[in-house]
Image 1 (cartoon, rainbow, N blue to C red):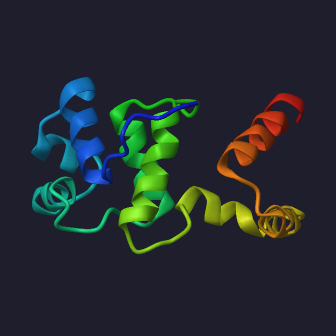
Image 2 (tube, helix red, strand yellow; image 1 turned 90 degrees about the vertical axis):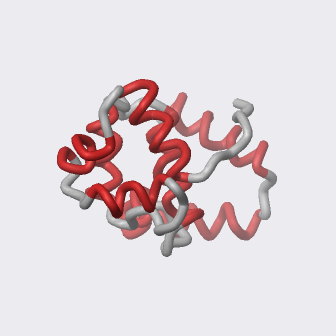
Length: 128
């Protein structure tokens, strides 16, 4: 699946909040338990995105993003990319499940291309 030009977490958040959810900044900040000034700073790229999985999930839920919506995953990826974490919060929690470290090490040692990794992910989704 090809993606459009990658945007920053705050840019995507603001776009989804305004254009799809149609929620004002102050109201949205209240709904996700944030200060409006902090939310504004995140949207403008002046503050790092939240790192906590629960906070990002609350933002996604409030935006109305279904669990299956690819933009939800993009929110986690962008929060990690532009935030203080290197691993997306939703992924980090899964790394300690039995067998996952073995899978991650195997994939890392094979040095698979992004295309091959996407093929592997699709295979797993389709068969497991």
